[in-house]
Length: 192
Image (cartoon, rainbow, N blue to C red; front, side, top):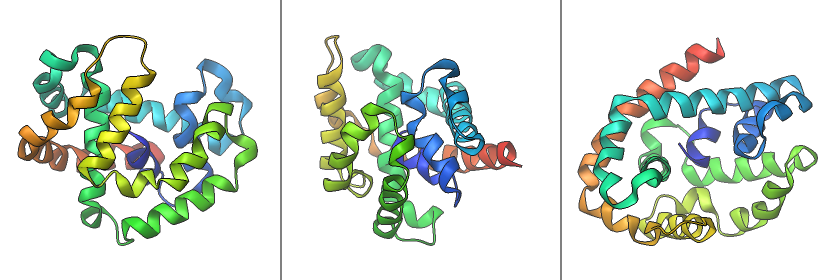
């Protein structure tokens, strides 16, 4: 799961969402430097990633991508699933995606003092280019994948990954629509 899913799965708890949002940029026990609810958000993010990485449905999606994307198949599926969440957002939320994104950007901006330097660096671009809403388009997800590919030090074909999404769109969408309710249930059980 990528930014949109992690943020969405935080529910209405802003501090939990901040932790869930920044978790990839908080290494090891640095999570203990944060207030309790933000730390719990970091832990929730890690639990979501573990559940997602080990689930048989995501394994099917990753297997389809492995011949071309090898070890990057998992991150590509995470980004594809954020696209599919954005596209199908009304199935999971009463709030329109555009409103959800605006609320999210305002919330994140009010917690700047907790954001790691790397997040502070990309946040203005995220807001200006409205990443969360643009995930709903093939072009938007293509920009995300190309950006990730440019930052990697190894040779990759992430700039063409949307071709794989388009080619097997219905399969990826079916797997996502089966998987995401299971992930929601898992998150609810973790947050009880």
